[in-house]
Image (cartoon, rainbow, N blue to C red; front, side, top):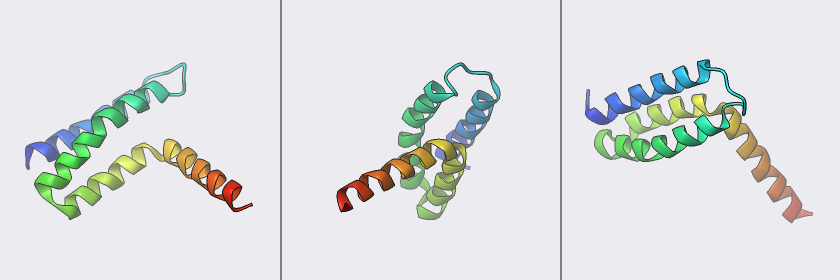
Length: 85
């Protein structure tokens, strides 16, 4: 296993641990931290391991960020429908 894949697996474990701990702000600060660390890590995985491994890590990250992704998609839909009216 390459170092980037090991780091990505460690990121997933860290995300699970952070999600299990109680939070006053619904885990948003932790999500921002995970996004800041995860984005360059994802690029590293794509660069070192190729598209298939990168897509697998992208899917794993999307499962971690399911609520922020839902909010992002809802925001995009609102923006598009406002401009279409």
